[in-house]
Image (cartoon, rainbow, N blue to C red; front, side, top):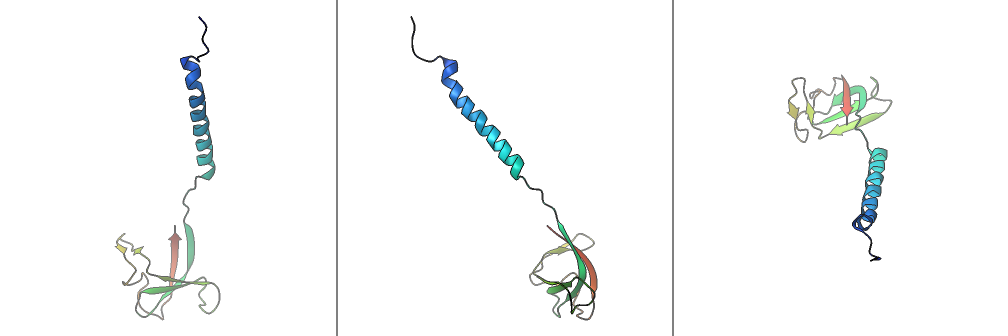
Length: 108
């Protein structure tokens, strides 16, 4: 007796093939789009404001020229690995506005 019904192997072949294609496509997408976090390192001279809550970072010792950044409300850790919240606390360079501090920042 011959029937036109597919056997159990043929019945599951299409869903298995679709699953394999989906896994291969996902793997290729993941390999092509994965990213690794690399920190940018910024070096320069930092000067705080009078309250000690904001840091002005300059790329040279001469604060009148060059690129500069204003850093406010950033969390930071000291040399003893104690973390400080930056919203209202002191900065890592103190509060003396006449003092420039050489800094090296790792920005994730």
